[in-house]
Amino acid sequence: MTFDLGSTTALWWAVIFSGFYHGINPGMGWPLAVSAGLMERKHSALPKALGLLAFGHLLAMLAILLPFSLMTALLIWEKEIRIGAGLLVIAMGIYLLINRQHPRFLARVHPAKLALWSFLAAMAHGAGLMLVPIYLQICKIGVHDIGHQAASTLMQGNLVNAVTVAFIHTLAMTFAGGIFATVIYFWLGLKFLSKTWFNLDIIWAISLILVGVFGIYSAYFGH
Image (tube, rainbow, N blue to C red; front, side):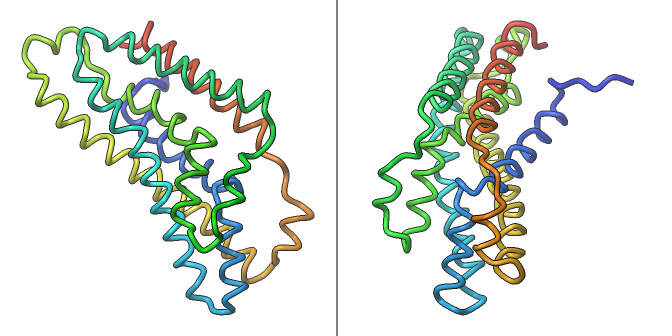
């Protein structure tokens, strides 16, 4: 029994896995939720902060995916759009490998504005771009579909897929980040985080490159 990486089931699992992957990365903000809970000295501050981070992340995912959902209605350019998206993700990964500094403008966002911080962080780190090749593969339109599906119907379906992908991804991210934030908040403390956490920047950048390569490969050889 073989496992098809291009199957719909595998792609939706990729959406969930990428959410978990983003969730465990401190760069997506869960340490800020821990900090908010500790500073306000009440347990309710932790889920509130996680909710704001999730909202900002969701908006960032939609800001990236929705334009591509409209582009997929251009049936004749489907392959080129997927290749272009893959190249864009690869370029982002290479940029992050070369430039290892975290975006300075994030430090100027007030800590209380967690939703805004989360939105900007996701955009700056290419979190939304990582979903694009997976999303386009989910929405792929074969040549045989051109004759019997109107572009408006395709566009509507892809808009729904974009929202669904963004929501499921953000839910998985919040779940994973929430687990880490809860453990750190109630038992380990921020000192443990500063002493033991490993740097995910290189792994993150390489992941972007690999996802971009997958997108290009699926555009050429996918079925």
